Image: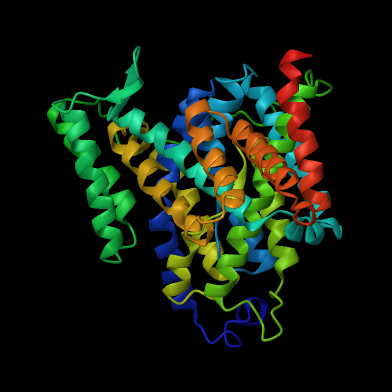
Length: 429
């Protein structure tokens, strides 16, 4: 094991790697409770989504640990799962089988793309400000879903949205939970999200606000595996969502792995990141596997930084995380009993982390600030990540053409902008 993972070479030990894996697991285990809820919104039964989430996470993380040998975990992406449920299925009317097919095709294309030199070209082609707008918009999209699930924001016939009733016990518990998650994070407590979700659930079960169905059982036999539907694959609407999923996966994977590399010490003196190609392929391969198993797009989790800070340096950390997720298969009744007011605060809390890129935006330059604003605001208000991306790119190019700043528009931006125009024009053709 020392030879395979390079424990001595990385100045770590078996005990340290296992403890690091436990730390990462505790930080991101909330996905087992949250992701099946999104999949259920799309029409996939909770137990089926539960199994798909765990198996996809375990397999994807094991690939990352055994092949790329990075101490990071891969799981269904927050924001990407919301787009799957609310954007593709509930928003655009695709069946969950067709949506899974879009995830599969986008992930497979990204896998091929990652094997080519085009990936490096596109990384440098997309303006940093627009990358910040996309990340922020996804975060606000996720926050809107969480706030509505909490009941803090509700529909209004006059003002579109309004403040919810603050005297309901579910909302008060959700607000308390949100503050607890932030407080635990500030104190450096790794499992704060999971602990808060479980604590709120216990309160709900004891008070009768939610139903308790038990703790353990045999792993569910339900499966959404290989339920792909290619019937819409030739339509432009379907191809457009494949493009959007590809685009989101590209930025999510590239941004997260680059950030993790800094923390894990994977970047060498020359600036090159150790085994980055393998890490990217492991991430994209996990998405292909996840779509076949029945879950939304997979991505590398920034929560892996918790395990890295605990001393994790090799793929053994990731392998530990994969094993712990497999154990969750025996706790389906417990996770199925978790009420919405316990998981909704986690969505808002995680969304706050998506706001970080805003500090890199030059707010004094309206040619930069306005496209970012449009992206960030339109995603939650239109409930469409694709719409925010499309209008943001069109605004970026349009402003520069009017201002005479043509040299700032590169080939990659032109390609995406043309595609955005076609996507917006499709309903009117």
